[in-house]
Image (cartoon, rainbow, N blue to C red; front, side, top):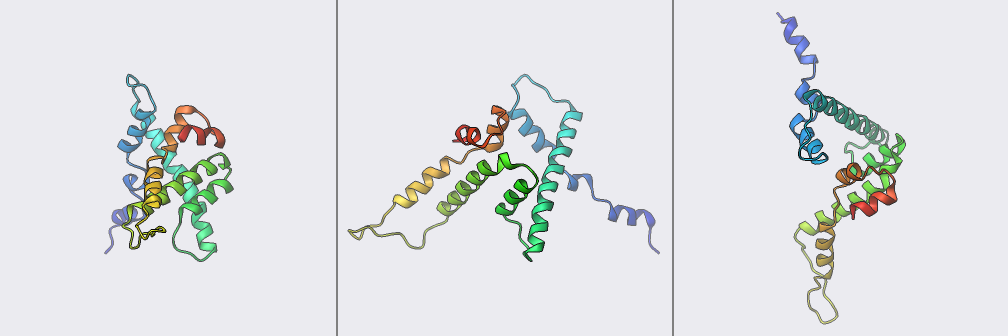
Length: 161
């Protein structure tokens, strides 16, 4: 015989699975505030719920696009498309720049199977060197957005580079 209490718990999503970890949210919040500032517990919990809901909102829209296109994997491009569709246009351009630089850094982290040869037949490290330099340029966009208080793409790009 089934226990009705167990059934209710199976259908209910655990709060820890529903939201981002509060310690991570609090750490990000603290980075944006002066060292002497304190954050109340209910402030952290409110931000935790808001951030988690925002991520779910964007991801749901991106997932719908993937389902329509009969794809199973949501990509960064899908997320950016969803943000634009949902009215977060100011964030699309700087996040697209961030995504491009991230992808470039991931390519430079992989060992090259073949290296380009220059005219003298020597290995050309310029492409790898440039990729490593770009890796250092990957901005932390969320902190640039919050610290600057700016949501205009041109200002964000300047602030993040």
